[in-house]
Length: 94
Image 1 (cartoon, rainbow, N blue to C red):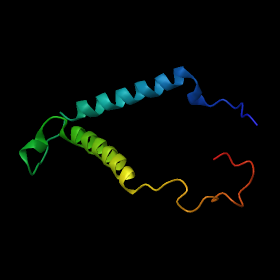
Image 2: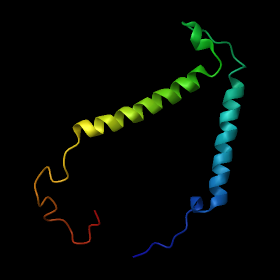
Image 3: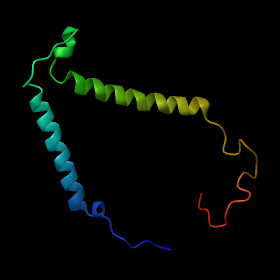
């Protein structure tokens, strides 16, 4: 059964509005970096945009390490047996 319900993010104009709001929020946060004094333990923490860059690099490294870890610890699809879908409904679309 098809769901014909339309959601607000299905329209391109609404997606553009969300992106513009995100860009504005990022610009405001970057501008606010000049408005307060930083009390840092290390000199490089006082650099402009350090915490934003640090957070972005940490997030990218986390995603890349998760990809490597998935390869190392993944199991085959039939790890628990050949017929592991027994007893499930016929309309299950997995």
